[in-house]
Each structure stands twice: as C-alpha cells, then as structure tokens.
Image (tube, rainbow, N blue to C red; front, side):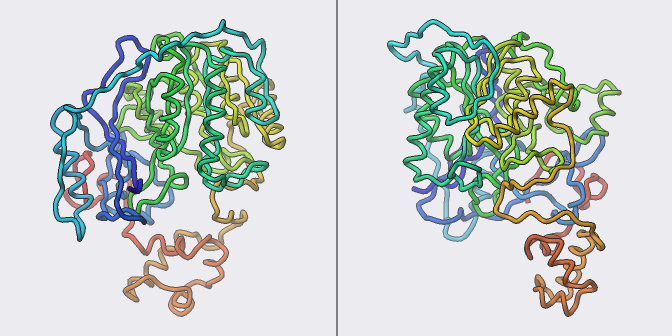
Amino acid sequence: MHYQLWVAIKREPTICSPTNTRLPEHHIGALVYSRYEGQLQHTKTRIGYSYCPACNKTTKDYGGKKHTYHHYGTLISDVWRDIAVDPGGDIQIVLERFADLFGVEHYRDMQVYDLSPLLTHRRNAPKPGREFAPQAHISESALLNGDCLTELRRLPDNSVDFAFIDPPYNLKKEYRGYADDLNIRDYFKWCDTWISEVARVLRPGRTFALLNIPLWAIRHFLYLESVLEFQNWIVWDALSFALSFPVRMIMPAHYAILCFSKGESRPLPGLTGHAGDGDLPNSTLASKPLTPLEEGYCLRQRCVSKRLRAGMEDRGLLSDVWWDIHRLKHNSRRVDHPCQLPPQLLYRLIALFTEPGETVLDCFNGAGTTTLAAHQLGRQYVGIELEPQYHQLALERHREIDQGLDPFRKEARELTAKNSPVARLKKQKYEIPKKTLQLEVRRVAQLLGRLPTRADMIEYGQYPIRYYDEYFVSWGEVCAAARTTGMSETREGTQAGAKSSQPRLF
C-alpha cells in the first residue's frame, strides 16, 4: 500500500503521567494509506476560522495576504484540533470526518473494524540485559567542525543530558557540503548509525528528541524503539508547507518530534520545577517556554500585551501537541542557512528536558539554533557541524551572546541560502503594491469567467505586464487572489451566521 497521510487528532481525556516522566498525551494518530499511487483522492474541505475571545480576530494573523484567503476558512490540515475523541470510547466524530473527507466518486461505503480487543501494548517495557557504564562529564561547551559520526565517536559514553537532532530529511535541500539525495536505504542506514552513537553518549534516564516529517518518523520510531525507551510522540503543528508530501488539498501542517529515554526516564525537569525560571527577553511567548498559550487565543503582540495587562489567564497545559510555535516567516529573523528552526522550539525542549548546567547535544548544529538556545538558558552544549561556513556562523552568534546581544534579533541581512526551489526575488521598491496587482487579476478573471493568462493581462489589465514579471515568482502567485474570495480577520467581517468561534466544516 502507499503512505498518504498521518493525521494527528486531539484526544480527550488527556492522559497524564503520575511520575512526570513524559508529557501529557493529548493526541492520537490516524495513518492513511491507499491501494493506488498518486495523490490522495478526497473532497476539498475547509475548516471555518476560529476567533480569539480577547480581540475577536482570527486566531491566526493573516497580515497583508487576507485577499488571497477564502471567506469561510482554510483548507483542512493534517492536525485536527477542532474535534476531540476518546479512542477507547465513542469515535463517531472521527468516522464522520473521514466519511465527509472521502465522499467522492468511486467510494461507495466505509467499513469500520474495531481491532482493540486483539491489541496488547507494553509501554516502556525494560529491555533485557540493559546495563550502563559509569557516567562521564563534559567539562566545557564546544562547537566542533567535522563529520557527525567521527565527532560523536570521540565523545565519552553517558556524557550528555539531552540530545536534540534535526537531521537532513533527504528531500534534496541545498546544503553546503552535503548531498541531501541519498538512496533511501542508504539514508536510513546512515541515520541508524548516528542514532546509535547518540544513544551511546546519552546519560541513563535522559532524553533523545528527533525531529522529522511524519513518514520518516515512522521508520525512525522502529529503530529507536530497539535501542531506547519510548516517551512521547510530539506533534509540532507548525504549518510546514515545504517539508512534507503533497496530498492534494490537505495542508501538511506538522512535524513529529520523537522522544525516547535511555532506560527508565527521570521525572522531566520542566514538569517538576527543576528547569530554572527560563525567562528570556525575546517575547512574551518565549519568556514562558513551559506554559503554552491556551487554545483559541491569538499571537498578535498587541492582543498578548492587552491580555497580560488585564491579568487574563491565557495559558494552558503543556502536552504532546505544540501549536503555538511557528516556523520562521520573515527573512529579518533568518541567517544564511537553508533550514532554521524557531528558537522558541528549542527553548521549550531544553527547558523541558534539562536542568541548568546540564549538557545539550546537537550533531547537525547548522547555524547554531540549538546550542545558542542552550547558551541563553544556562546549559552546557556540544554542537557538531560538517560545513565550515555554518560552523563559523554559529561561532560568531555565540560571541554575540557573550557581548550581550540576542543572536535571534531582527536584522537586515543579505541571504543566499533558500529552503525551497522557488527563486528568491531581489529586494525592490514596489511602484504598484502586489495586492493591487493581484486584485486586478481577480477583476479580469471575473470579466473573463476564468483565470487570465499573461496575454489576457496585457489585453485587459490596467497595469504594465512588467510589474507581474518583476514582482512575482510564478503566475500561480499572480493569480492567488483570483482563485478565492478574500477574507476578513474580524468576526464581524465573516459571512452571515458565522457567530460561533467553533470551527466548522465546509
């Protein structure tokens, strides 16, 4: 069969660990496979917008692109937080969602098989014969320039308190000094080798967190389970358009963060109050990495500040679904590396799994996000990076911390690295706003009854065609507003009758 989709679905009730050795479990997974090749066949389904109870605006800030979105809602994604289900009880709401989603031609009925009576599951079952050598100590932080396997093998056994690994995904990204296009068997053989080395250097009771796209995470899980003990499968709902597989009109929105411990896990410092205060200057959200926003509130800084002044309780339970940390969207937050994680993600992971002074490892350190976050949080760190240019960049950013600067600050930079095959447009002053040009394409589309071509815009458009050629990366971007209706971020601006903040299907 052919893998199509991993859907994360919110579960209720949440399962909490009485020993605090793992995060509360707040989701279940639904794997979708097909007997046919190609993209998934399903209905075009939208989820209605939800609104922040404090400012009455959409929970996501759509900025200057509101004219390119639908008035009702966004396309459904692979994280379903608008419904909740008890997997041991009534799952009718999930069955109805799948029936709606696959209500297309050639599908006649849906058969449901309950196999739960046949399943047995051992959680954290101790592996036989597991004995650990005495723990070692890494005396000082280090950034190492070299091959990950070579440098890992030089580290002593049982010397690292937390390992976070965000490896190359084998999706043909343009890294310096590394070919991201291995044969898939060679890729996983290589991954298994460095996973084994990371497991060796991890201290007993400590955690190894591995980030990847869901499909690869399934394979990583199988190997990790053979050498370590499962803790959590964290769903990071980051709306990751570029790093997942297209499944027609379902937006790939999440990454998997697999958390495994070496032997039985200790109580997690972030859940027991032993992580330190973790206060950081970057933002209101970053200053509280262990207390996520309650679902339903927006992240607009003005609204966050208003809620803070009013003493509004807008914080929720930290679970295994992380929806309040988003990918870096603006180049002012980036440095010259093709794949960069938001520092808020590392603040949360490091504060959750370590105490001040403990050692954090990243063997694909890139521009240094992991080690920089560890540095800011008062942890020791070991970062390994193959490419000299990225290694040097990380060294410079660590020196900025020593000088009292925030390495994640906004700053105008000349960037050459790119995380997608789409060409980067040069910086320029727009004589005509891009929104105006896109709305003009919508006007012409309504006139013609179809999406206009370049020739149509020359004939019917009000603006010279050179603006479209110079300001947009593709004709698809030119036509973005013509494909939809446009939306308003305020509740009052939605279609008549949309009064509830509960998202609905369309």
